[in-house]
Image 1 (cartoon, rainbow, N blue to C red):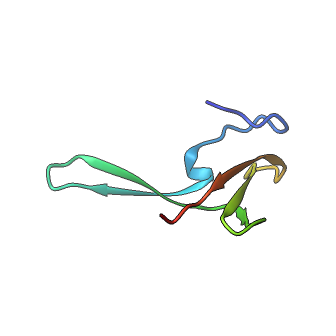
Image 2 (cartoon, rainbow, N blue to C red; image 1 turned 90 degrees about the vertical axis):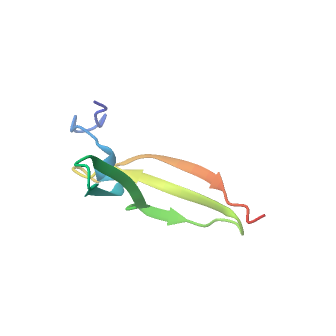
Image 3 (cartoon, one colour; image 1 turned 135 degrees about the vertical axis):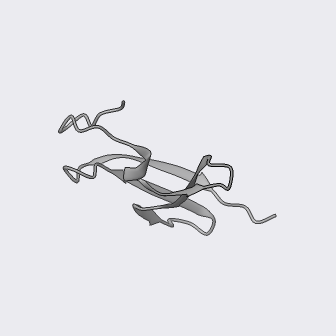
Length: 71
């Protein structure tokens, strides 16, 4: 498991995204990843930055940038 470099707490996808679990009729558990829980910054018209923060110590782990195109 990945750990925070500051507080050594284990990090999971559930810490950063909304995760939905649903059981199908056949008994299988389906997991869907939803929206990002952290802060999203829009520095330009179509660019977005996500700020990744440790949920236990509130220190910034990093940033990720992506470009959104509606074509």
